[in-house]
Length: 448
Ligand code: GAP
Image 1 (cartoon, helix red, strand yellow):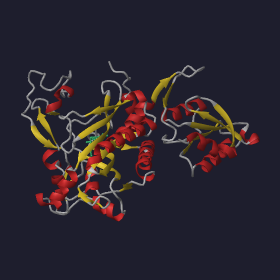
Image 2: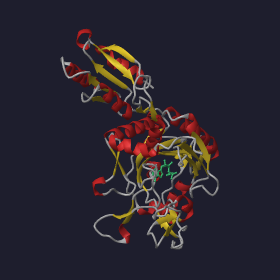
Image 3: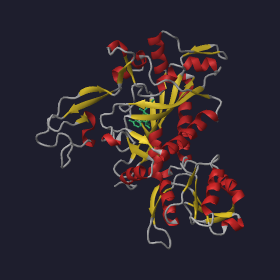
Image 4: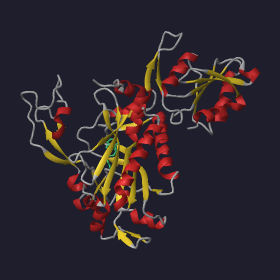
């Protein structure tokens, strides 16, 4: 029995209705497992990425930032092992024309109704499994020939490995130190799905920490702890987070040890990976040294020792964290004294896309002018929405549903006493705040 309810379907609908996430190219029938972030979704994801960048780069002196290009030299992917090894076994069904992962047939559904697993209808015709490379291929330059083949990167990490010396030398960093970046990655997944959980285009936030090989186990434990603490600080519930240690069979081709941070998405999806913490050993720097001919080594002056650093990697999906936050935040509840219940996205206020909504109670007595002036004054500091349409109850519900932590209402008394009512999304408590104090009031409550 799942511990947490399945809210995915309700979230997909809320996200479309309220401007969080839309299906890509929807007017053409959609693109398979590719999603567009709408006005509120882009703010939420940006807040998550900013939080990560702050924790991993800005607040440390031993991690440097980078923004490497998506298109890289094709040899990179031979060296990294992705050309030969980034494959899933694929089977086709000649009866339903479906394509499935041969090693995950028990999770797949035949395209025919009533749905069964592939192979369970008597006339299913599954082909022999063949290896399918998950990298998207394209061509660089005007000639479409194999010599011009390039790949859309399936992980951001390789941009960091090939820049190891550039960053280390230009920033005069000493091992141990890390390089972090946020960027798009692409995988031609055979069985994508579950909304933005597994998509073909997604964003990773990765950090490669270069260490003395003898100290890699300690650093691995350190980063495991840091990363779990980061997820908790986002407001993800303690009981929905856990570690999963990879068995030798589960380890990726580059990994010596790996733990996933898993989040309980509820329903049958249950606990799933949102981040991987890997000890990659010297696999990547050694491979790139061999394939490029450039020595990717470090000279430890203090100990007069030259070595290839080992890498502890933390790799988290910005989209998966976005989905985890939405799932974690979604709740339906009754409101005391009201017949209709409400849907609330209880996102941590510091991450919410809109921090405050400003309403005039009525469209009379100059209330809209005063509300506009308050919204305009707050805008340079906070993401603010202005809304005067519909009843005040409806406006509250709309803001609750998108997770706005504060609603500020200008009413009949506001002009005279120069104050407004500020309503808290979670407690429903209402404070009377003088207009000159609203910015400070919000700052205090939004402070992490
Ligand atoms: N550089 C190591 C690496 O890429 P990974 O476990 O394959 O490791 C890391 O991916 C993270 O990237 C995952 O934990 C997940 O959050 C995200 N991710 C991977 N594939 C994804 C996909 N198809 N859609 C959305 N996010 C994905």
